[in-house]
Amino acid sequence: MAMWSPWRGCRKCSDGCLHCYIHKGDAKRNVNTNDIVRTKDFNKPVERLKNGNYKMKSGIVYLCFSSDFLIEEADIWRRECWPMIRARQDCTFLFLTKRIERFMQCIPDDWGSGYENVVVCCTIENQRNADKKLSIFRSLPIKHKCITAQPLLESINIEQYLDDIELVVVGGESDSLARPLHYDWVLDIREQCIRKNVSFEFRQCGTHFIKDGKQYNLQTKDLCSQAKAAGINYQKQ
Image (cartoon, rainbow, N blue to C red; front, top):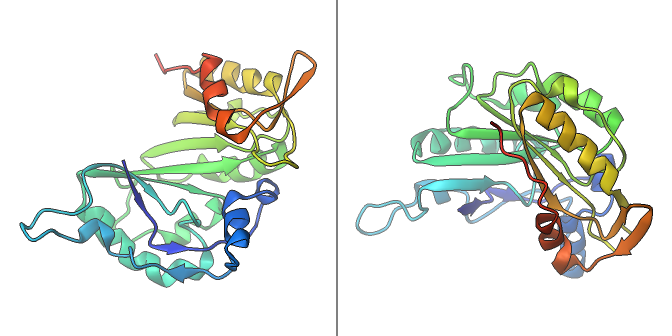
């Protein structure tokens, strides 16, 4: 697994952005997250060692996890990224986006029905944004599609959008002021995925987690382990 952040910085654009961990971390370092800047790692996928091998190892590459790969300010830089992605067929590049409506403006000329080594994950958090974004997402030419409902802010129905989706990831919000995550919401999405035979992963509990009518206040370090302990992940059959 590798990380590639060709640029960093982002702007809040969605209901799920309220307690964004990138903005919180930057605030502690007196960094303005709204400044989108190119990083020193821009050419990371194609940098080579003295022996000619790539520095970045083969496998999954988490792309732009400190920004949004489709953010407007990066339009010029993104054009240079696609050839690097195309050159590294030994890697699978995965990125999340809250700006799926920009997708067709951001792809290269040779995209066609999609690059085999690119996974696009559309992020949602409530029914309004699920309907808005997933109605666009389902018609886009992408080989590998995933949905992330994190932070999940309410009960949502996405079953009608699950055709051609490979994985749905669900999770809560991690913040002292986090909005609560109800376990019933998680289980309901899981059942939708099972009915459509789509893989499902409960990624993390919320700081304020409600199960069987009781609220639990969890530490950030325990959110992922507690979700895993629930044992409700589902693998497509």
